[in-house]
Amino acid sequence: MRVLSGIQPSGAMHIGNYLGAIRQWVAAQGPDAYYCVVDLHALTLEIEPAALRRQSDDLLAILIACGLDPTRTTLFVQSDVPYHAQLSWLLECVASYGELTRMTQFKEKSGRQQGYRVGLLTYPVLMAADILLYQSQQVPVGDDQRQHLELTRDIAERFNARYGEVFTIPEGVQPPVAARVMDLQEPERKMSKSVASPLGCLFLLDEPTTIERKIKRAVTDTDGEMRYDPAAKPGLANLLEIFAALTETTPTRVAEGYSRYGDLKSDLAEVVVEALRPIGARYEELRADLGELHRLREVGAEKAVEVAARTYGAAAAAMGLTPRP
Ligand code: TYM
Image 1 (cartoon, helix red, strand yellow):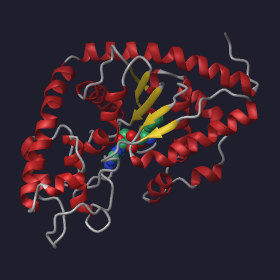
Image 2 (cartoon, helix red, strand yellow):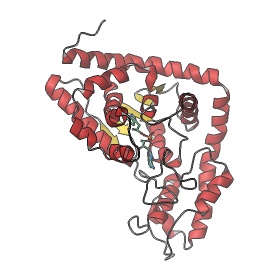
Image 3 (cartoon, rainbow, N blue to C red):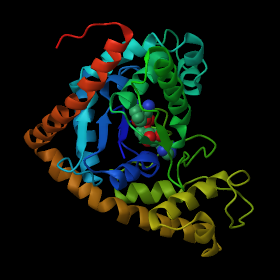
Image 4 (cartoon, protein in one colour):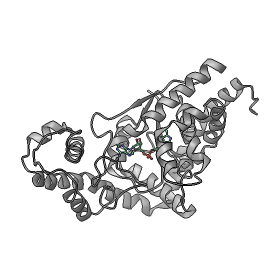
């Protein structure tokens, strides 16, 4: 099964990324899985060049610390493979302006700023290029990427119908629980790197005391009734989902074990701290050896280029371009 997914180096990784996506990446890793740090995507919003460089290294290290093994699977940085930007242009000439302006994420992000970058609009086309270059069958992502996946399928189908069968039609896959982890302070909003409230986001590298404080302060509700009900009790449901995901059970079953929110929160803090402890330790080791990290990055780029070059060549030729041998 060919698998591809990506994550932006736009900020520190949080538990939403981890539970919604990265754990699925680790489970699906192998010779046919491709995972990328999508640095080109991070340019769609303001980011300091030095921060982008540093955060790309940070992210590579934390992905390996989460359990990805770059000797068993392909882990690479998007901008190391020039075909992503190249295929993106070809697909911009297949996608329509209307379908891009309808994207929820575009509407949200463009609404927050004046003079937003064109890249914010064309972003999902670059994402389609990431996916289609590797002929991916499955794309493990959190719930917030579903719409972009649908668009990718539409673009691929249109391309194939117009120019001949070049692309595999991919499918998005979500985890059974915690596909959309919510902000701990505003549980009606998803947890996010870019618009995190200081106490609302649990970062993978947070200190144990910080994790405890954030979970203790998490917004719940006032009726004190312990049950899993995302619509009526979104804050509590979010905590139950995080707990369930980390202990391989269901939110309802977690709720059955508690009567008081306080007890649930203390145990959840412990579960989170214990789950993240080995990741933090391994991260420190990996991040200390930048030479080795960059060597691994190069190994990934070489493997990715091989596959991407083939698909790009086929797509370009199908459209009437003549790629040089
Ligand atoms: P990004 O960098 O925002 O997030 C990386 C992954 O984490 C998931 N995620 C969440 N899951 C559950 N709860 C949350 N609160 C939460 N926040 C984020 C995302 O769904 C994603 O799976 N456009 C993508 C990056 C991308 C990509 C791709 C993904 C670029 N090219 C190709 C897949 C395939 C993004 O911004 O993810």
